[in-house]
Amino acid sequence: MKFHYDSHFHTESHINSIKFNTEQYLFYTQKNTIQLTSPSINTQLVYSGHNNSINSIDILDDQLLSCSSNIQIHNLLQNEAPIRKFYKDDPFKINQVIFLNNSLISSVDDNKSLKIFDLKQSTTFKPIQTYSNPKDSINCVCYDDDGFLLICGSNDGNLYTYDLRMGLLYIDQFQTPITSIKARNGGVLINCLNQGLIKFDIKSKQKVEFGGIDRSNDEDYKYDNAILEIDDGYCYVTGSRHKLYGFGGLNDVVEMKGSVLSSIDHCDGCLVIGSDYGVEKVRVND
Image 1: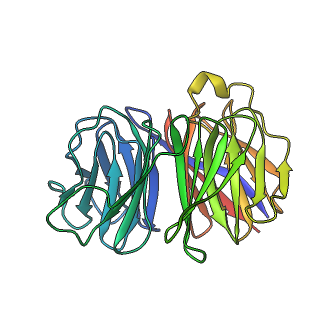
Image 2: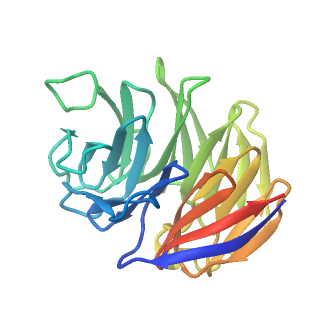
């Protein structure tokens, strides 16, 4: 399997987060808005409501979840005001927000907090659970629904694993700040500042590192360019200096237009990467 650079389009500002809903519908952030582009739509749709730059988006069914200094939910079919807003603007940056299921969402922030919100609570927008075990900002979060495990990576260099039913289970140490993670098959794939991609088994504590990733400029971008995604056992991970890497049968590298590659998603043999240049597309072929 090989992958090669396909196309791109330039945007006016850095894309912090990018998501496919289907092959036809692509959502990406532009400062404090989310934009939808599609071949079937003549004009781009814009979802507004945030006062600050949007750091993360997630999609479940017809709901579009996003975070800046607050958390909001839009209806995908209505590019109007958000239908839910979860708390007033926070002085601390919210780094990522994800759906856990149809009822629960989770966020991590610079205030060293992992929070869980219940969407069924119609009268309150406060978290139903808050964990503050890390000693520094929490950069990323992922969810393993098979084991009810909520996992987050912090600037303190630790990986924190929580059971939704019991609370904190494990604290695992890594050498440098953890910048992005992805749960997979009882383990987690981890990007650490100035390191390669690490496959980590949460229970056995076994670590397998994938080498060959250029991390020489990571410190210049405050961790924004260390993001990964998984597709059928293949790993796609961004390094510094315009490079996208593939592992797990790919073992290849592609040069990108942008130097800061901050988000990646995939659909039907196509990767889309959000960068400081714009939206970039890579095709994956057998």
